[in-house]
Length: 218
Image 1 (cartoon, rainbow, N blue to C red):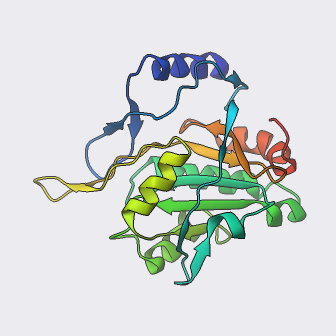
Image 2: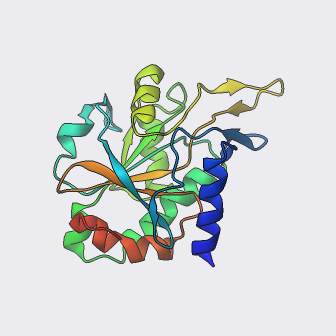
């Protein structure tokens, strides 16, 4: 059933329609920057036929230190997600589902997995804010990064994720439009070769993480 659902979602993307993104007010939508209609699918994952290079991002981590994404995650299984801490639904659910699945891994594999959360709302998501939010929304091991919005936006676009600058509505609500996909990067090639949508469950992650950690197809 989930396979059919994912196929239908892929056809929507191919047709150029919009995908949901999270916001601190009404639901908003963001246009995707990739076409997954021709890719190979499993129940939860889309295996990309043209893997992405890891974004060339140098940002600031939760300790206020410089973090070179490519250098610090080189040769490590890495999940990258762009979102923000004030998101009321998709972002915390995504982090929670990955965290639940990670805890089911052997300790050695838990230590290998790098989960990187890059904020789409850097004005509010300071290193301290990310440092408080990630352990509760996800896991203390998760890496939170912030920096200048143009650099973050360029990094997201490099792997097919669309994000827009946060905007403030008349009622004061801040809206951050962003793609809600997670990209998995292989420890063998450092290429992003598998894409997961926002409907990926903790069980889906638990099933796929052992293969992703080895750089295999899920």
